[in-house]
Structure formats: C-alpha cells, structure tokens
Length: 325
Image (cartoon, rainbow, N blue to C red; front, side, top):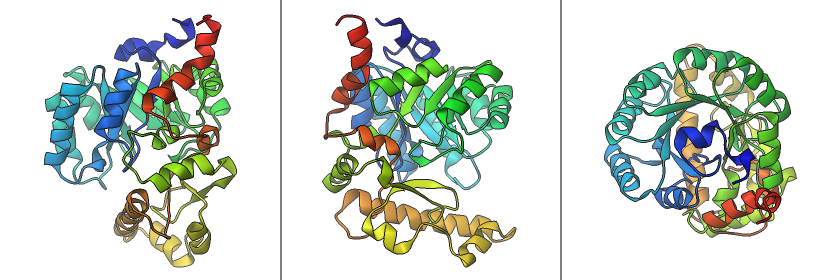
C-alpha cells in the first residue's frame, strides 16, 4: 500500500484508507456507512438524523451487525440538543467506534467514552478550540476549513492544517475541499492524518436523497456555492438555486437583533433551526420549487452519480498509479 495512506487515522481506526465519509445532516444513512466500511474507509452519521431515540438505537444495532469496519456518530454537544445525553448513552451502550462532536463543550462525551475505548474527534475551526479539546482528552481534531460544506470555518486548509499540526500533539483530520485524489494528497502533504469528505457522497446511489438533489451536485459548480446565515444564525454553505436567490442570504435587521439578544437568542436560534431543518428536509427528499440544498464547493469535482465504492476508488486513483497498480 502507498505509504502516504498509512497514517495515525488508519492505525487508530484500523481502516485501509484515511478517509471519513462525513456525517451529513439528513443525508447520511446506514446503507452509506455499510458501503463505506466495505470500501476500506469509515462513515459517520449524525445522531440527529433520527427523530426518536428508539430509531437511533435500532440504526446503531443495525450498523454494529452489518459494518465490516468501524463506524461513527456525530453528536451536537451543546444545550440546544436536548437529546444529547440519551444519544450518548446509546453510543456508549452499543459501542460505536468513534464520536465526532460539534458545536459545544465535548467534556462529558470524552469522559463517557474514555473508559469504553470509544475515540472522540472534535470539530474545530481555530487553534484556541483545538488546544482546549486536546486538554480535555480528545483523540483527534477535525479541522473544519473554509471549503467545508454545511457549517464552515474561517481559515483555508493551507493555513489551518499546518497551524494545528505545529501546535497540537493529537492528530489533525481535515474537513473541506476534497473531491479527488490530488486534493486528498494535498491535505495529507499539509500534515493532516486523514480527511472527512461529505459533498461527493451526496451524489451516490446509496444516498436516499432525491434524484434532483443528487443531480444538483453533478450540475452545479464551486461558483454556485454561497454562504448564508439565515438558517441557524451560523454561516452555512448552500447551492445558489433560483429560490435561494429570491429569499436572500443575509439575516434581516430583526433576525440579526434576535440572534444577538441576550434573552431571546437561544429561543430564536431554536426556532430558526427547526424552520431551516424543515426547509432542508423538504428540499432533500421531494421535488419542490423551494430548493435549499446544502453542499460544499467540492461538488466541482463531481460529474456523475456513482456508488460509494466508486467514489472511494476514484479518490485513491493517484496513489494507485504511484504504486504501479
């Protein structure tokens, strides 16, 4: 095997290739994770993709029985996620292989997972937070850069990855900006021990989103990706469809006030999140003129709807050529 593909991430999770099929809200499902594990990588699913704890538990049991390799769960670890404790209990009791934490303090998750041998990777966008989660005992950081789909960071991968690698003693996994093997090589050469890839896996046969959504990943390009703060108050990347252009990208004056108000922001963010969730859900699974599709600029490299296994094969092609295969 190409030595570049043997990294702390492959060793930590015992996978063939240093790739995480990223957890994507509404998109990731058990079929995608099972296919990812069969392809030598690992997949992760957001716990919030399941409406009830029973549905989530049943999905974890199914993955435990059917994945040929490790799988992970993405947990939102701030107070906004009222199901977090129950979701964490399921993860610990079922024995998932790793958890990716987002949007909050991961201490309780790290503490609960440590004695069970469950790895915890934490989303970070800067060095300050990376050092904080390292001090709490995180096993790795997910460096979310400004090319990530969904919620993105402020820094380029060229800036963020070396900064974290130079200042942290735990592995750095890059998230954002990878749709082909040359981009994967670049992230590894910058010092990342692996990559988390989302958008290219939206346009796969195993994904259960609508054909319109999948085809949009093929048809649109990087220049069609725009950033909005209207969904949750945090910056989020979406495809600039005609409907998106009609409603605008920026929060209006009242929304900005409510997002920042000391007493009201918690409730308004919750309201906007639920409203945004419904908007994403309707767009993802049914034909509608109100299309709000989440994606990152890495859709630029997607020119067909493929199987998960083919996405992985295409990502690895440059490495295989170097080995003469």
